Length: 433
Image (cartoon, rainbow, N blue to C red; front, side):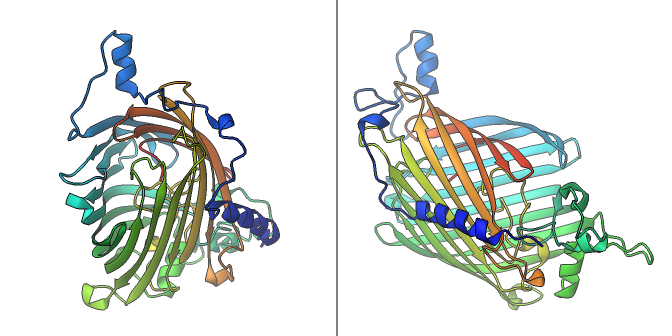
């Protein structure tokens, strides 16, 4: 099994050195004025449309919210043709200085899959309480590849088909599954001092009607999948299961805007306890840490900045069922791992990092912006003695930003991402992080 640990370690060290640089050296402020300066006020899409009709800009009251609705259209082998609607509503609670938001989508595919999602991030009056939620219901199908970032190389199907020493396409080792998935994550955090919050929550994840399509238990024609082998070994059901957990968290948030931050830090640490009295088959613990920071590159052009995102998910081996383990794009926004499909990498422990360069494109008004990004994912697999950082999968890409509401800084985001033997196209309201 090839881990390429030396090359991966050098790549990771370079990325983390960049990510944790609090002060970014700037060689010349004048060279960075690629967009609107102080004498060139920010515009949004509505301003451009009204300008083309020779109408003055519409002035919204301070209490007005911002609603963005976008079509969901796409196609991939797992879902077939996808269509639906997605949107985001940004607003300020009375007495709050910070924007809050609801976002969600409803989608249907030609493979009879249905996807319903609703997210909330809300600051109450005087920013005294912070609510964070992730609610989902999916009638879905999704391929898995096994555990760890080397998967499917060295995975159970690799051994089953004796392909360990041969060059084999990833597609031959995909393990397709159908299932219903329900999630209810909701936490409430209370302000201790300015920018610092502590709180509690309840996290529920459920998988039911699981159809492990490559699994065969027929004597003489047996094929064991990673899902079946893992769950059987650790004593979980292979057809349905759930995790019911209490959550304790601390949050530090100095961002000037959660939808599109120009400066500040968001840091979070949480512990999740899936106790037996909550109905779980066995007691389980889950730890999560997250860091996002935003660093301006220009005093006169706030849209020119570097942003960083690091997230770590940690759980003892064998405490959670297979599909509940941390996986790509199962974060609250479903945005981690651009360039790879949802669930592509999975493990009891996973660390993810991303760096993004954000810049204006429009010479004046700032309607158009762009991003360049790179990311890295590492996940472990104790059964194969694969530890974190021994295998790292990089991704990279670029995107376009269209300012649709200047007051809330809501952008329409269009991104293209690339990974190893992988590609992704993304259309979303607001920034990735």
